[in-house]
Image (cartoon, rainbow, N blue to C red; front, side):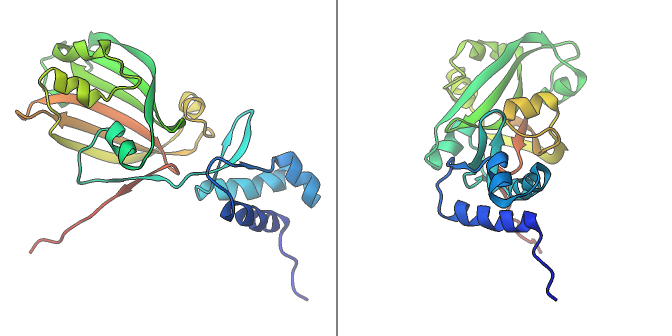
Length: 236
């Protein structure tokens, strides 16, 4: 006798069908609705939803519900663009929510990245980056104190690159690393993801037109909303 299909897979197949015919950000049935429709426990319904969330097909917002996910934003690793420029190229509107900013003494790692003397001052900026009102990343920026004037710009709607260019410091080259980390409690709340959700962590130092470090930034991107495209060429 053929084994019956597990209930969570039946729900998953139905949600896939709905998602195929839906638009990004359309609402999906709630856990309670799935429980009633399929006669299953909330744990079974959640199992189906979590599997699709792990694939990046849907996302959940606490207190609001479950929604169809947009296709992830993609970025080529061999091109230096601001977040605002990246989003504009994809027809999306970028904005930021400023969490904190100021000037303080640099930490050792920040001094090294920006090639500053010990105990030098740095301007700091922490903000959440949005694309069409979807939170994409939490960004921690460190700048030499001589660039602190950019903190007075409207960095909620203006590109930091544009503000730096206004000071005569043109972002020209970047060196960085890409790793992975789970979302902590604060990040999960800021990015509307579950605690422990996978994040892509990019650290990069940006050099100006003279080869001088002008920005050191760590950005934590939601793993299922952002993709890095890599092209590698083999050299003889």
